[in-house]
Structure formats: structure tokens, C-alpha cells
Image 1 (cartoon, rainbow, N blue to C red):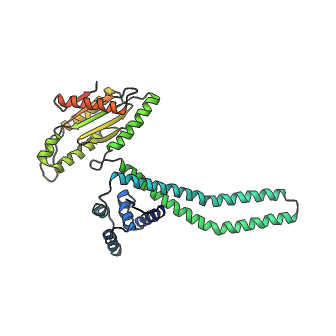
Image 2 (spheres, one colour):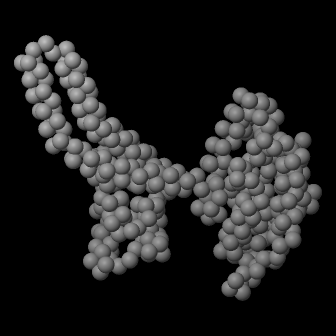
Image 3 (tube, rainbow, N blue to C red):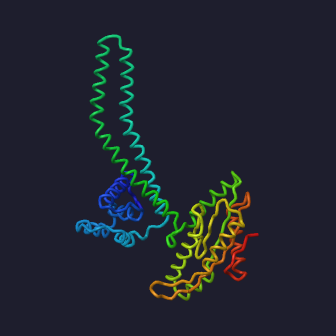
Length: 340
């Protein structure tokens, strides 16, 4: 994404992009940031031309406009580039923190100098020595007075940049871990959460369970109603699953039409009740499309449940919950099975 720019050039582009977004009232989100980063990088004449014309016309950069610009010029951004963008921004945040420390050091240095002069005054034994110390105090105060306004302005500027960058990093980190289609966590985020949970369980003997959910006859839905309706159903299922679990649980799209839920501090029987609640919620729901397009009506799901066994690897645990899911599907679907 950054091609051959040096770190200094990247930093200039980053600062210009963020400053422009703030001046135009554009939320500092990863997608918006990417649009303006590419504008200031200047290697795409079309995006430069379009944004120049829009700025000259004083057009409002609404959320819809920014979304359209991202799709037009930046839709090729993939997860690897988002991760690289995050890492570059993290380096910039680190550098800005260093700048804050350096600027703050101006004040700390002055304070240290005053303490040193005060100690010298206490030890002065002649008028001449006192005059010399007072003269140094005056010189230090004058120099600090000249620097203080610049230091204060510099700190304000850096703090504003840090605030903006922290917002971008927070949203970007979230985006890297989120499934683009459904909006819930992706496989990468789930794998990271599972690894942390296994580590915690091994250290503190904490129990947890997994639920794996699969949409029944999803291939038939795609073949009959088309992939656009299929995508809507995937989003719907993801949202319903996410709504039925706790805040501390992790609901993620595992792949295709499969979803997985990590439930900390939950034994297998309790996880089964959660899975059964998810299954029953779909069984009782009839789907209708707002535009009147045909929908499959009732969509059912099957689920497998597995409680973590102490010392078990992530691979073995996922394999067990996956086997339980397929037992549920082979037994007729629209049911929940517990792993053996």
C-alpha cells in the first residue's frame, strides 16, 4: 500500500490526511483515512482530480460520499494491507509519544535548573556568588519564557495528532478482526481469542466451551434464491447469534456458512442450553424481504457443543466441536449435539 515511500514521507502523508479530515469534519475511520492517504500519496491521478474538484466546490463529505469514494478508489485494500497500515500508524503513535516526552522535558529541565540554583543560593557565602546565581536564574527564566509558548503549542498539536491516530488505530484493529460480510468477528479474531482462553485455562484451570453453528441446506438456498439473498441470510444468522450471547462471549464467522461461539466460564451443559436457544430462535422465525423478493421462509441451523478438556490443543477442541456439529447434521439437522 505504501510502495517505496520513506518513513519520513509516510509520516508527512499521514499527518496531511488526518489534518484534512479534521478540517472537513470527516470522521477519522480506517476507510476514510485510506482515501485521503491515497490522495496525498498522489500516485493515482483520478482520485487526486476528483477530490480536488470536490474541495473546490465545497462539497460535503458525508458518510455516503466517503463510502462511495472508498469503493471507487480503494476497494482493493485487503487484510494484509490493513494490518500493515495499522503497524505503520502504531509506529507513528510511538514517535509522537517520544515527541511529547521530549517537549515535556523542556519544562522538566527548567524545573531541575531552578532547584539547582536554589541549592546554590543556600550555599552561597558572598554577595558575588549570590549575584552570579541570580543572573543564571534570570537567564534560565528568559530562555524558558521564549520556549514555553512554542512548547505548549507543540504539545497541543502532538496531543491532537495522538488523539486522532489512537481513534484510527482502534477502529482499524477492530476492522482487521471483523468479518466484512456479516460484521461479527472473523476467523483470525476467533483464533486469537481461543489461544488466549486456552492459555488462561491452563494457568488458572478455567472452564470454557465452544458452539459451532451451521446453516442447514445453505447451498440449496444459494442455488434457489441467488448469492445476494444468501449473503443477506448470512448477515441475518450472524446478527441473531451475536444477539443471543453475552458481551464476554466471542461470536465469529468460522468460514462459509459456519459460525463459532467461544463461551468463557461456561460448562458443556450450559453451552448446550445456549446452542439450543440459538437453534430454536431460527426455527420460530419466518424470513421476509422488504423489497418483496423471494426468501426461503424458515431457515434452520444445526449446532455442535464441546467443553474444553484441560491440556487439549486448539486444533483438537475445534475438531471435536466440528464432529459434534456433523453428527447433528447427519442425524437430520435442526438439532444440537454435544461432543463426545
